[in-house]
Amino acid sequence: AQSVAQPEDQVNVAEGNPLTVKCTYSVSGNPYLFWYVQYPNRGLQFLLKYITGDNLVKGSYGFEAEFNKSQTSFHLKKPSALVSDSALYFCAVRAPISGAGSYQLTFGKGTKLSVIP
Amino acid sequence: DADVTQTPRNRITKTGKRIMLECSQTKGHDRMYWYRQDPGLGLRLIYYSFDVKDINKGEISDGYSVSRQAQAKFSLSLESAIPNQTALYFCATSDPDLSYEQYFGPGTRLTVT
Image (cartoon, rainbow over all chains, first blue to last red; front, side, top):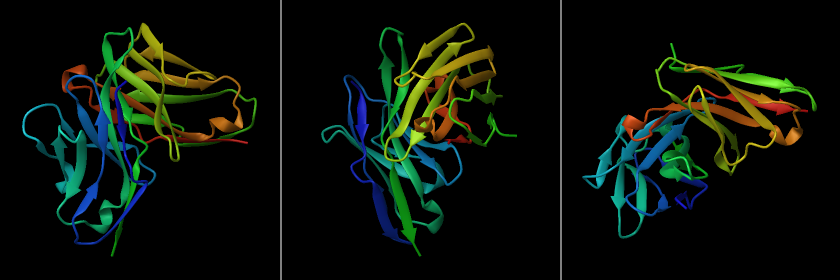
């Protein structure tokens, strides 16, 4: 079954420092991978996705993610963290729906990012 | 206006009551989804619909039902609410031509007492 894992429940980083939020995946075939962000009292917002091509994917709000096939990872990164980046981050993978000939998204459990002023 | 809207945004109800959560979208997508979010568990799929006539159960459908009234509207019902259905509920839409990227509503916070 297709799945993603986010090994850290919480990540703390100082404002201005680089940040990394980790995600590993387990899929059969080529992975379609996504990152979403959830700000307090808001729905999930799409940040970026990897389908194919360049292993470094650039997304919204200055975020990027690095696809690493050998390590089955898709870590989210930002060179310089802002306090406003504090939120809940979800990694997701496209997964087939059994018997339906289509796909859904399967989400990780989320990582809470806190950027400290 | 937001592309995906949910009503109500917050609801407190009592055990045994029937409650309906509504979702509307203006993105023109055929595919719609209902998820629940619980702390430490991420998002879990309750039901999904690929068009008005195609409705399917997700991984945690017990205790829930849905209705797809139109392409733009997808409602989630709790026939007899119980306390462990207290959660944050999200509606989402997707377009398969966009690699199944999903667009989420703002959520409904439901408390069952």
